[in-house]
Image (tube, rainbow, N blue to C red; front, top):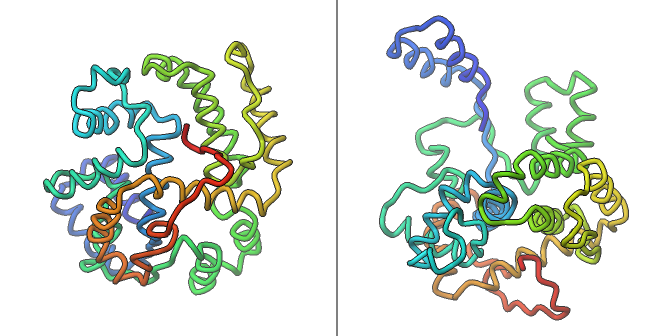
Length: 302
């Protein structure tokens, strides 16, 4: 949640070296007089999204920090796994087991994964508006209208067309990330082509490229340029049917939770109990507790 007034105030403190106690007092008063907005998300999909973004997709920083911790806790002797430098190959089941371990042992949980009810202090903060990611555009329009922002025509157009990010722009940013961090990726034990393949599968998991469109490169295509690969990814996006994209996104979610034990699912339900109650989410959705069958053997995570 970005509270722009508070960020501006903190930047001002840095410029002028204001006294910390005065700054905190101003921040407290400012929060009380500001329009406070929060967006929540289904705890199960939020946890899965955090895994895809921080652990599965190209993210050497998290591989080196969280990933190595997962190896140490879940796999034991990391030297036997082939992932000594970084935890770049953590499965969703391993990630969830580590998350449960942290919770049970009262360890610090990264804010990307912790229950949203704990992260944003809903019992201590009087939020003016609380929206849901599942109804993001409608909620953004309602909040923007209530704040008088829709008086500007471009605001409505931007929300309806893009939300916060367009998919084309997101794909280009992800491709650029792989090229910019190529050395880090290879240092972590993942080849450059494997990094691009992970990016391609991430786009399929995120519902940007159809699960029917195969990865277009061979292992020896190491000299492919950013422009060429981005062109291939954009063409795949253009050729993907929206209905297939939606199906692929749901299939990836079901496959991930289908890899968990029933015990792990029950533990997650307990951990997120407050989130379910506060924000009216189903604690036992079918995509988590229902039976999963991979009828056509499409593997989003191999």
